[in-house]
Image (cartoon, rainbow, N blue to C red; front, side, top):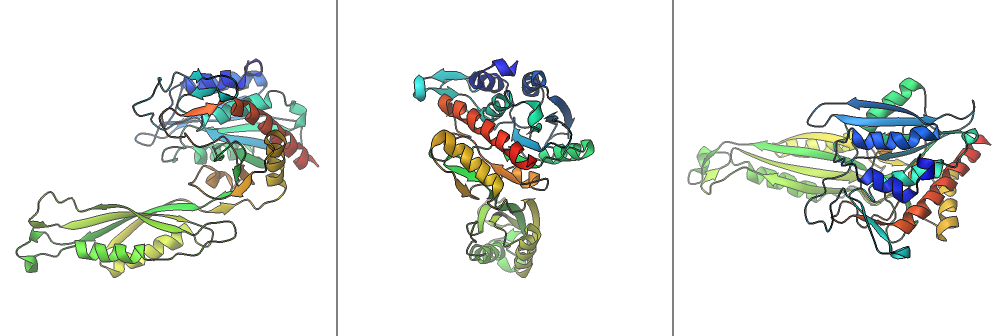
Length: 384
């Protein structure tokens, strides 16, 4: 039973289950085997097809008495590919060092099987009378996320189980455990740009139509944009050119087409559709086309009772007050914010996605205590 396992044991068991995104199977068996003895009903389902699937998801819930609050932990069991050059096997968890210097190595130790282990250990001692607790766990956060948390939310709606508050266990700490929590995230979108031309010999340019100068002019205008100067809680939006390609293997041919891609991370002064429309207009001005995909809109959980619950729990265990931030990339909180207030808090992110990913075992133990405090206080706050 998970209640008799240490957080280190739980983390090691999860790390030992290879689960490169999109994840299915064994790692979910492992988690269910820990949660079911604690009284959780585990709803599991697989959705989607290759190349973005199949993806397994789990919604595990332990219901409290009727009318009591519902607090949710959320996270993902999928991990990025480990790559080469690890000191030890990435899916064979290994502890090195001792005392406060002991580290647990393995892919997912930080992002984010370690946090999920802390969640499981945290709820083991919370009585069901305190309220409803749930786990929203996907196998597709590191990938396209087409069949992950969005599908989970649909299943939760069907079950009629919508949380009052949600904590996502992404690794938000920067220099030490507890120094940052995320109360929002910027939006994210990508736009594929194309300019069609007419292929020809470079010595006879009048018989061709070179798309490259048009694309260069388009990208120059886009790169020169100042989207905004930021807001009280968000840094300035930024547009970055991420790919340029003409597919031309020779030196004496004017290419038939030129393509590029831009990525925009944007704050709450914009919408994804509005930015795609702006880029499309500029592309058309230079004789090109644009196709945009919005992967997430910006959101903010305004500082208040929930952020104070988290700050108080962190301060009680670490002695520091976490900075409330919206920095960094994106996460599945961008979907869960449609359910309820959502905040992210978790481990130090220094080694996430790196080879020899590792977490301090002392941080895992502290995170259990922090998560327990948060869950207990959140349930009590919502109940009053």
